[in-house]
Length: 185
Image 1 (cartoon, rainbow, N blue to C red):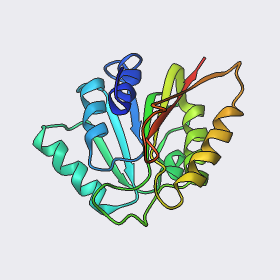
Image 2 (image 1 turned 135 degrees about the horizontal axis):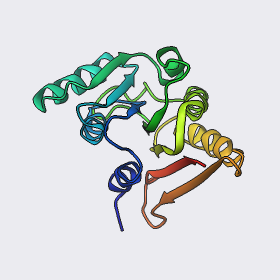
Image 3 (image 1 turned 120 degrees about the vertical axis):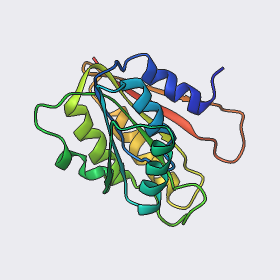
């Protein structure tokens, strides 16, 4: 069985092609941004968001070390993704790592309301068979509330338009992270 992070990347590898535009909604330390950069290649574009300057700096450093020049880093909340997308732009896929930036201020967290707004915006721009992947870390203050609101929202998506998957290990302790994947039909 694939780990949560390996499976999240596998789900994107299956559907993203070189030359596409993709979104890293929570750039964090840049690992997903770098992964997406390699997937879309030199002709593609990654638009990466984070609300913390430290995350943008960490991501920028990793991208420079790996000679990646196809990424736009945006210091803003993912709830404002729509402000950065042209009306007719099509997104190949997107990834979120929900929770807080590792090794930083644990009081700065993602929240259900802003994440749901970002999901809905991305769904409008998502290509047919494109996917939005959410890696849900919820073992922190506020995490359970975010998890529940996102699950409720995703479960209400029209099954004629979207398929939704939940993937996680059920015998791990301490609130193990899990994946929510949404695919546009």
